[in-house]
Image: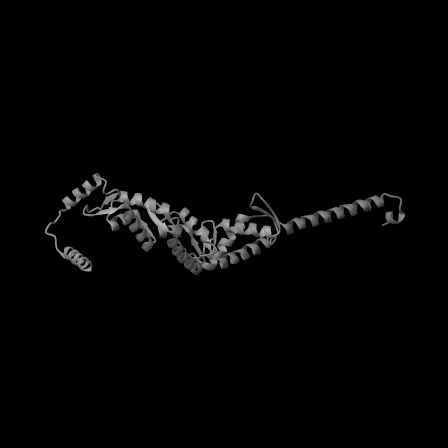
Length: 288
């Protein structure tokens, strides 16, 4: 029995190592595959490569797409079509399935992007932010060739974890710079003693920043000053009242009006009292 088994193994090895004298042309292979499909012996989808010399299954194409995304983090469907040598139509179909099956991937503007790619990108954004104190979302969007809305959607869930900064009015600011601006807003508004339009105050602060840092310094939108001011007002760090969001009346001005009104009241009361006593029958007062 063992001898027979050994003989069969020898014959199999000989058959495997022997070269076939029969060669099939590419056309013969295509016809053979078609026949197998017609007879139901191949019951899965086969795709042609762009060269027309190879077949690839849809499952294998999905696998290749996943490998490329894992390697790059971000890839356009056009690039995948060129790299994998498969028609763009098939790439688009399988890309949709890949993204649907994996919540860590997104397909936007004919590009597949992974969450790990965005983690890496936001780490780089944070490094640049700490160096410069401020970055505009429009600048980030231009560098990454994506829309500002997508930048916002990517940054917001990573604020406080990967990106250490504050997002306000289309700008990213470092916590240190926010503290500095907060001190400026607090000092400027506390120094006001008469009703003032807040936009004029913010314009003055912007000019101060430009004088301090020059034309290439950090730009701060008026809306940022305003949001900091509103927060200070809620905290009680500045006292007064706001009308229509921009007309600021400091508490010290209201207090001054009250004192004037009170002094006026006492002054008028004193004059009236003196006249009353002079017209009365008290000789000691009438003689004064």
